[in-house]
Amino acid sequence: MLNNRSELLFLYDIQWANPNGDPVDENKPRIDEETGKNIVTDVRLKRTIRDYLHEYCGQEIFVREIADENEHIQDAKLRAEDFLIQNGEKVDKSKVSLVEMKSIINEQVLNDCIDVRLFGVTLPIEKSNKEKSSITHTGPVQFKMGQSLHAVKLEYIKGTGAFASGSKMSQKTFREEYVLPYSLISFYGIINESAAKYTRLTEEDIQFMLEAMWNGTKSLISRSKAGQIPRLLMRVVYKENHFQIGELDKYVSLHSEKLDEEIRDVNDYVLDVTALVQLLEKYKDRIERVELVQDERLVCSENLFESLTSKGLTVERKEF
Image 1 (cartoon, rainbow, N blue to C red):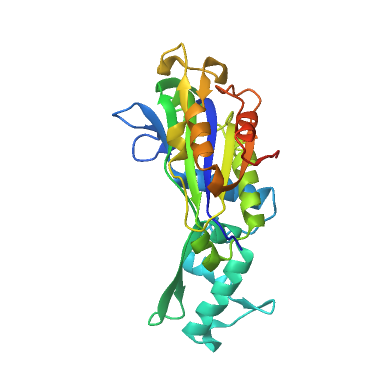
Image 2: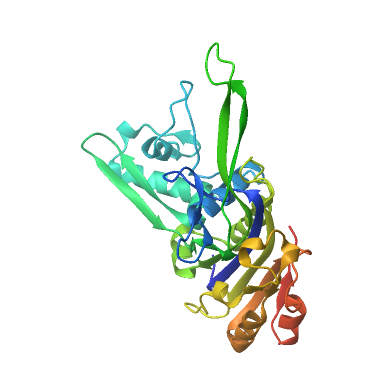
């Protein structure tokens, strides 16, 4: 079990693609109209983590799409009943009470599903039309909405498809899409040790999650996500219960000779981490360690590892 709180800072970028389309707005990349910055939902990041944990780490996850032989997608109630298992055997729900049913499912889900231990879940439980209940776990790991560190430029691209627009037609269909030439996205997260006790989150689970954030971002090789590259991942682990600095994402910024909308590559700017280093130094007596992964192409205003180490902080370099 986790004893102390920790905070996360995660930066990744994308070129000529769509990091998170809005289905109610022509699937355009989400952009804050006031600042011009790109927005990515926490749900998108959690999906990245879940998919990597399941596909590459062999971890069971609760929230995933499962279809039957008729391609009907399983609903949450049926998914919950997948875990109505005791001593390795499926339990007949007609032979147990609703309370027993909830207890069995809860135990099995927490034991088996790493995404529930990380992000929590609400499980609808239905024994019959008249006997219904639910199980709710608040996730220890929560992320704010991701946001680019600069204003972005939305590009509209239109082209022809490979097929005709209809039977006996000579004209091909048109395809159209919206992409961002470049976006460096910053996510801030927190790991709550109090909630972790209820979902049984472990340090091993956290390490799996960090790997999934880094490698899962690179492994999103769909047409709209190809080219995503993780640039920086930092975890600040505290010595004390219930303590956090907060808003680590507010202490990094971009310095570039180009206008924000003209940025096209990681080489077009320097990531200013001066304020972040000063902040961590200020609270170094309350910090147990800093875990750090950095892409070699990301240029910072100062060497993060060397600067933090020289300030008396314990820094663990990680590789995934």
